[in-house]
Image 1 (cartoon, rainbow, N blue to C red):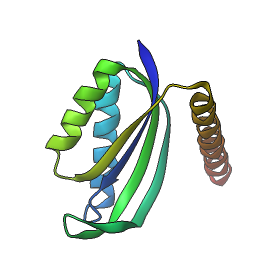
Image 2: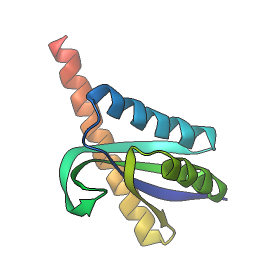
Image 3: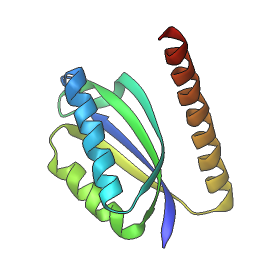
Length: 125
């Protein structure tokens, strides 16, 4: 049975831009290999943490919105625990209609932002 999920992750702030992109791509690949359909990715950039985590006071935040079978979550979280570059993560399952409606609104919001960015890039080129 597939469910709606939201996966928040925090990466070490010491990673270079290429390393950050590689880690996000790695996480996306793990999700897709385990049957997830990624609907949106919100990259929030580097922000201050609420409290120090592994002696870091800042971290690179991102959120994946996806639909996946419940078995995929175990494998994704296992990979996140193994990797030293992910300092925090949280998976949220949306079950109730109200939660799913909020999930859908978030996807529409990030999809429209992505389209706006793509249109600006096309105009500049």
